[in-house]
Amino acid sequence: MNHHPSREPEMAAVETPDREKTDVTGIDPALIFRTKGFLEPAEGRRLFQVALEASRLGPCLEIGSYCGKSTLYIGAACKKNHSTLFAVDHHEGSEEQQPGEGYFDPETWDIRQGRMDTLPLFRQTLSDGGLLDTVVPVLAKSAVAARHWATPLSLVFIDGGHTFAAAFTDYSAWAGHILPGGYLLIHDIFKDPAAGGQAPHYIYNLAATSGLFAVLPMTGTLGVLRRRACGEVLESFPDA
Ligand code: SAH
Ligand code: MG
Image 1 (spheres, rainbow, N blue to C red):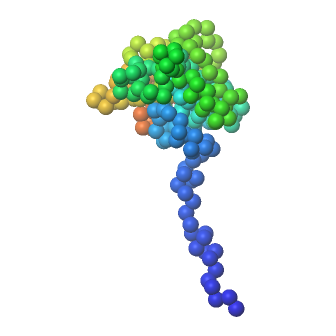
Image 2 (cartoon, helix red, strand yellow; image 1 turned 120 degrees about the horizontal axis):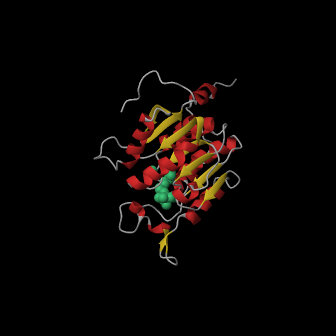
Image 3 (cartoon, helix red, strand yellow; image 1 turned 30 degrees about the vertical axis):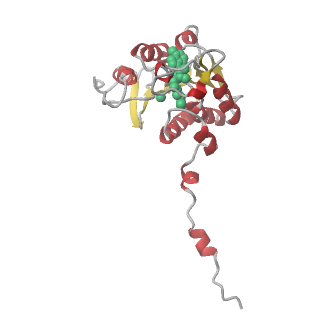
């Protein structure tokens, strides 16, 4: 007779690792971890969730891909819906990412060209993430890419230059292309000027007070707004 207690109840009580419980994106965690970028995991998961809903309506577009961290999250959602993510970046880096500045990474420096070039790293991320048939890289300044843009977008994610001029250009050039029911997402929103630059916060307020968008809860520094239906009349004035 077998006197050893069955191990089964013990096994059943073992917790699934936290990562498996919370990772809804299906992206390889090691790939996310090794991809250079400026996005918290919770912000990434929110990007994925919003993009999963939005990309059923049409293509998504991001301004500012860097090495592709945000691209992985939005791209994974687009891939599930057989949609497309346009990823706009000149890949020469923002002001704060240049040599001598706070966010400079020597691995983004191209010695031969004598300037930053994140395109090779970005392309590797797309390849590793299985996103080459989902993401369309647009190697251009935001304003140049916008010049003849005519495709309605289900989601616009603004994470490009952080000067007021750059942020305002991104907002004015792209927000008008968002479909009713689509989303505008803006990264690096700091309500307290001591915590960070105010340009993203400025365009977030423009959108929030325009009456064109419903303001949804933020995740970290990620602002989320939903484009209202055309003809929807607000019950009260938006807060200025
Ligand atoms: N979304 C990325 C971080 C983007 S960093 C992540 O998840 O990690 C900002 C990026 O915006 C840089 O790669 C920079 O090259 C790009 N950028 C800055 N100004 C731009 C402009 N005017 N047009 C296009 N890209 C721009
Ligand atoms: Mg950012």
